[in-house]
Image (cartoon, rainbow, N blue to C red):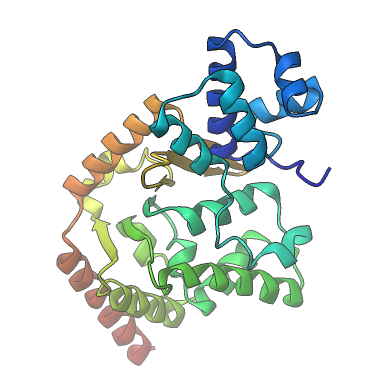
Length: 292
């Protein structure tokens, strides 16, 4: 049971590729199982992304399936590899659900993150006070201790933006997300100042889709595309919903997501204009505070 694990987009892609290679070689699941000294159940779990495959097992299957193409082998090895940066949350695994752990995996491993949010500032960019307000609102049943715990997890996620080789991060925000006074005007003003400061870093771009473009962006729910470099050559779309999250790597979903991102970017203000808009909102909030 040491290697039994949840399905992730990476493991699903690996499993599908291994099944296709096995079938193309005319090898039965029983023969594959025998080659790596296991049973048909494990082969099925590997091919459906529910079980890890070791490097030794992978090399054995390459030989059995006659996978000679070096690029294909390199790609499959990269898919099978566990990320190097997935350690910080392992001590918290019993309190984090599988969907959220997959999100942490993608955030830690992706070379590029492209996100659209229509209502909230993304978790990777939230201040402590803003995150506290969001978590209290969404999960009103939590104790103060629980809220502090999950805020700490959210802030720990943000370390990926401060590491030596951070992912390129493009954030497209509908204007309502930077005007909604979550936590009150003081919390929002501090949050916007944080966004303005982060928007100056070379790996991060924040662009606002203004209200006058609302006609079609209203129909777009939040989503994030995680892009992996070669040899993985993998992209995954994360779509949050009330029951959890979807992680999709279907080619058509990926194409549709990038078409949507292209339209959002065309409708959005430039990075500099977005900063100016956020600065103007901060001034409005400060004037309101003085007049209160």
